[in-house]
Length: 180
Image (cartoon, rainbow, N blue to C red):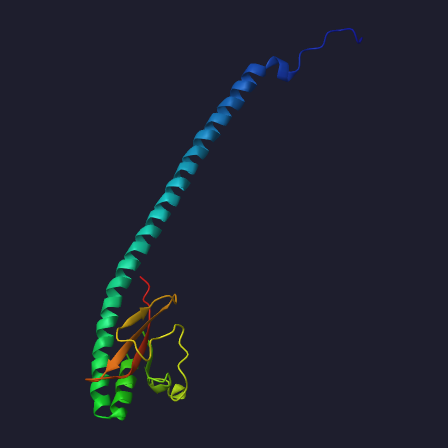
């Protein structure tokens, strides 16, 4: 054999058209297979975002209804406490607090004097100390119920306890929020 003899063309040169067609078909099959998966992933993400938005809206509606209910319950407790304070029946107020603490979602109940000291509390260790709440509460002059929902898991409602002609103190109730 001599080096001058022509060699047969290589496999790639002989079958270039077939190989090109094969790789194009393989690419097309991969494209269609993966594009379907990409579409399903995008649809799942959209569905997840829609569900999260819906959950947020339902939680906001639930919170607003629950907040109104908590205000009504707190107002009722304020009137019961007021009635017993006018009669100077402090032991009964303590029993109200103990019974109220047995309710689900109630975290703490505190009655604050006008000077800012804790008069009666569900946690007896706090009585006589200065009130150190997470938000400033209008202890002396506030005549309206205030609601603080800035803490992520807690709603704090403070309400004045009024006698006929003056303010007796401020009732502070902390409730745990319910997650939907």
